[in-house]
Amino acid sequence: MARPDYIICLECESEVEEFSWREGEIRKAVCDVCGNSDPDAFSLPEDFEESEEAEADDEDDLEDDYEDYGAGEDEDEEEE
Image 1 (tube, helix red, strand yellow):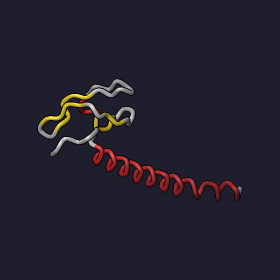
Image 2 (cartoon, helix red, strand yellow; image 1 turned 90 degrees about the horizontal axis):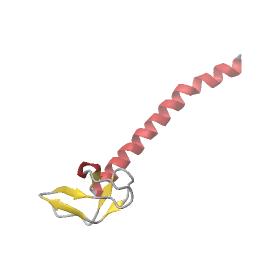
Image 3 (tube, helix red, strand yellow; image 1 turned 120 degrees about the vertical axis):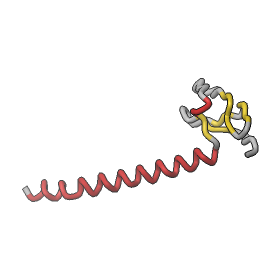
């Protein structure tokens, strides 16, 4: 895989353009915004976008579950 133009800091979601890349992996990186320097706490832009989409889907599912759970309670309270 070719070296990306930037990576994403998973701590603060900032773009980081200066990092070491070798054999398809992030070797060294430091986020100028939050100071994160753990190479495992950075993501490739395409991986970050996929994880955000998955999180959004999970949040939608949780909202649906919450609405389903609470829907019957309001009706019961009104009848009392």
